[in-house]
Length: 250
Ligand SMILES: [Zn+2]
Image (cartoon, rainbow, N blue to C red; front, side):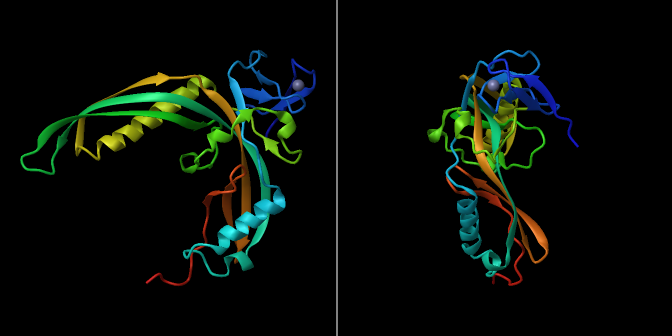
């Protein structure tokens, strides 16, 4: 059970509902985004991606996905039933960042082992989900940023749910840092077997707050329940659970 709280929209006076733990809230009547704790306007760019699929179209995409790919049961599209379809605008932070890593490590694949140094420099629009407890597969989501437009509450479908941010921009930058460090450590380990020293420097641009349309879909197949995340902007299945098949591949 969640306790919904309410503040008055500083822009249009309508009630803005929010849940405990949320940091930013967007008015569903005028699109104004407010920092809940201070009541001050949100100063960063607030963008959105448009949803291009209604319920029927989303269901059709799911059925097509079910009917394709040889790892799925052959009767999946026919025998499964979609039991939940919800369009959710998920909040993200898009963090533009240049990350420069220098590392020193030991290359052990040759004998004798040698000490090697290297550099990794990359530019990212790093995506951070602005919700704390979510099973959404952020790293598998290839966010179609080229389609982003300024947030426009009139483009949000009435039946859709818009989630508020639970993390602020500083937290988003910290998460981006940690994830990029881990990613660069992984890249460095393609080059050396053991890292002795590794250091990453970051240059951040202005973060963008983004709402992206995701269809949360659940289906049943032979009495079991499975989940699918569908990108409402491109129609791509971001991640979908596949029931185990009876046949062996060989
Ligand atoms: Zn308002």
